[in-house]
Structures are given as structure tokens and as C-alpha cells.
Image (cartoon, rainbow, N blue to C red; front, side, top):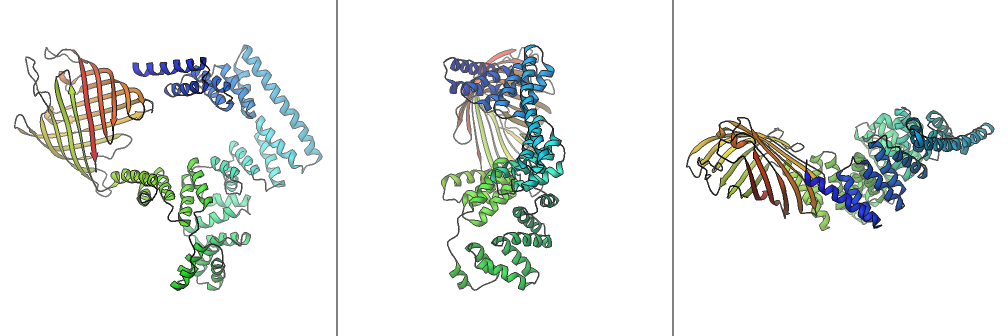
Length: 638
């Protein structure tokens, strides 16, 4: 068990309760949140945080904490009731009914009675309202308000079939109210009518009401819609110009030009002033050789207000240079609408939509370096680094220093993993009080990426040495290999912290003067979990021919607390084993330590360790030991 980790959590919780007693509620919330992050499964801690949120007038935040506390302990009916009442208070009536219904069926005693009373109060009031609205519908079947109210009340009470029926009727009566499309899609989705739900949500997401469009996108699949889904959406919403336009460009991208022409024509029937659609349709007509149909469309663009689009038409029509120059005007500003939609899509995780909108924004203003940077990040998140690298490369030329710096860092990070040649070097000098010696480990490596070849070949020079050479025991032994090792090998790309490697070379002992063949290889893994409170693990399995063909296993665990951006303290738990059962290669260590991150790629560390050998030592070494170990890691990459 990591003592430091437990102590840090206990201190955070104590500080939170102290701040609560002193009525420093903001500080208490911050400390509770840190404690919960370190111990997310502590239900009582979450309940106490929820009550602090209530004291500060944050019912939504308190509701979410009570919900999580109840999830962690389904028998905690106090948390369940608090959650139910807060759902009712924050207008989540359907969830409140569900909670009270579940508690009254599973709890006993006062909790059951409270839940029963709350359920009857809420459900009874809803039933009375529904009875009045049903009467209104009977008297006037085309009563829009009655159908909408019945739909909402039925959804709250869980009668989704009735809710869908009344939402659909209300939408039929007032198709301009697109919020009804969102509600109908939500109910269809909940009842398993997936295809119909996708169609109507797609139509709602391409509407003119931004709030409805955003909420509809959240309910849609994360992928980009298929052509048949666009067509299904248009059957429900045939006058949706945005749907027709987007489908037209999708068909054009797929090479289905006839279908694209039909959709562009439908767009222009509804919106003759859509110059972009007019230009695209005009060019498609020109490709078909129908100049008579194309030229009126292109003339409309030339006479329109979009000077950039008009200039593009002049260029495509090969108009004289002077004529194009006289028509040029200052470039229009980047389309605010495209950037807004792109950023909203990015924030919601609709990355393919974000790419499309950022591309539109870039076409409007090719010198907007912020758009280039965001296109790079979006392609990167889509795991399309081949497309991301050129955008980062362009953005790092931005006159905005912050944009240029971020793009430069991203570009170097991606090109480092994809460039054909890479040079790296690292060193790790250590001082050990146990051995009263300094040790040094270093490597210089040059590696190549050969097209699609899955492995990376490299040449390497390793140095492994120490300042003493031999122990002072009755049977002196070497403290390190004391050698310079030249070799070549292959390694795998790093995947989720995992990498394999193998190399062959020659070791030259700088103390012995001997030259011996050296074959080594292994697997390494490294992962880190958490930010302020963290746990890191690194493991290696290494075969070394010069150690009598032995394979060694190293496991290092650090659990600790990060203080600021550079300093962290932690508790070490290390284990070393080998296949051949050598006495010197089987031991465990534990103890506190700290590390300080230096500028660049450097780390200064100090640990105090208590060690114990797990194999008999035959009098060569003490079975247990203390060690004060200081080290400096530094790396360079080019």
C-alpha cells in the first residue's frame, strides 16, 4: 500500500472539513474535489461535497454528487432521496419519478414512506394535468398546445409511445417549431426507432435554430451521416435547404454528379440568392457541355456581393488578367458562422463536422492561422496525422507568437514520430550511498523510418560504467558492465506506452580491455495515471547475452503528489527479478523520494530506499540495506 498516497488523501479531506467548519465554502469545495479525484469511490465524501454545494446555492452540482454517491452504494437511500428531490427542483421530473419509484420499491422504513409520498405527489399532479389536456384534445383535436403538453407530460411519466404520438401531431400542426423535431427524435431513440430518430435529428441539426441544432447533434451518432440518412431526413423535412445543400456537396465529393445537380437545383429553387450553390451548379453544367444553362448561373455570381467567389469564377472562366484585377476587392473576413459551427462541433466531439466547417472558414480567409492550427488539431484527434502535419506546418508561420509556438510544438511532435531520420541521446548519472559510487548510463542513437516497414532500424552507442569498479567485499564483484557497447537493432513504434526492441553489437570493456559480442533485447512499458495525485508504473524485461544469457525483470512504481508544474514527491515500490535466480538480481526496494523537472527534458531525483534481497546471498552481501540515491536524467532529440 502506498503510504504517501493515503496520507495525502487524508490531509486533503481534513483540510476540506476544516474549511467547512470555518465556513470557507469555496476552499472546502476545491479541497473536497481534489480528495474525490484521488478517491473517486468514496460515497460519503461525495455526499459531504454535495451538502457544501447546497450551502452555496448550486443544486445542479449537488444533484450530480448525490447521484454518484447513490450509484456507488445502492443501499444509501438518503443519497437517493436527496438526488430525487434535487431532480424535482431542477426540472428533471422524469428522473425524479424514476428515483422515487425505485426507492419506494426497494427501501424500508422512513425512506420508503418518504419516497412513496413524493412519488404520489408528483405523479398525482401530472395525472391531473394530463386529464385536463386530454379533455381539451377531445373537444378540439387540432389543439396544438394540448398535444404538446400531453407529449411532455407523457414523456415525464414514462409513457413514451403516447409522447411520440402527441409530439408528432403537434409537429404536424406547427412544423416551424423545430424543437418538436428534437423532442420527437429523442423519444423515438428511447423507444428503439433508431432509423427514424436519426433522420429527424439530422433534419433538426441542420436547421436555423442554433440551440436546437446543437442539442440534436449531441444525440446523433458521432460519425458523419450516410447518404441514405440525408434522404430519410429530407422525406421528413423536404423544405430544409441546409440538408439539400449539404447532401449536394456530399454527393459531389463521392463523384455522384447527377445527384449533386438535382440537390443544387432544389436549393436554388428555395434560395435563388445562394451564390455558392449557383457557382457549383454552373460549373457542373459547364462540365456537361451545357453552357446555355451554366452561364446565367455564373453571371448571377459575377454580379453578386461575394467578390472572392466571383473572382474564383473569373479565374475558372479564364477571363483576362486585367479584367480580374479590376474586379478584385479586399478579401472578406473569415465566415464567422463557419468558425462558430466548427468550434461548437469540435467541443461536442463531432470532429468530421468540425473539419468541414474549418475548411469552409479557411477557404473564406486563407490567411487565418488560427483556423490552420485548429485544422491540425482536429485531424490529429481523428488519428489522421498525415493530414495534420501540413496544417501545423502552415500555422507555425503565424505572426501571432502564441499560435506559432503551439503549432511549432505540435509540428515537431508529429514529425518526430514520422520523419525518416531521428537522432536522440540521453544520460542518467546516479550516486548511490550504499555502494559509495557514482554510476553512469548513457546512449546515443540514430534511427530510420523506412516507408511502411513496421519496425524502426537503428544504430546505437551505449555507455555503462561506475567510479569504483569493484566492491570491497571478501569476494569483490564488478559494480557495472564498465563498457562501451556499439550495436545495431530494431524496435517497434511505441503503442500506449509499450515498446519492443532487439539489438546485436560488441562490448568493449574500458577496465578489462576485452571485446565481447553483445546481444540484448526486451520489452518495456510505461504508464502514468492521474495528474495532481498520480501513480506511475514502468516495467522492463531485458535479455542480456553477457549475463550468461539471463533475462532480468524490473518493475518500478511511484505513487505521489504533484506540487506545482515542476516538483513532485512520491513513494517508491521497486522489484527486480531474473530467470536464472542469481542472488544479486533478486531484490525489492521501498521508500520516499522527490523529483524536480528541469527546463527541457531533464529530471533531478532523490530517493531514500530500504532494500531486501529475495534470494540467499551466501555472505556476499547483507540481506537488507539502506540507500540514498540521487540521479539526473537528461535527454536530447533532433
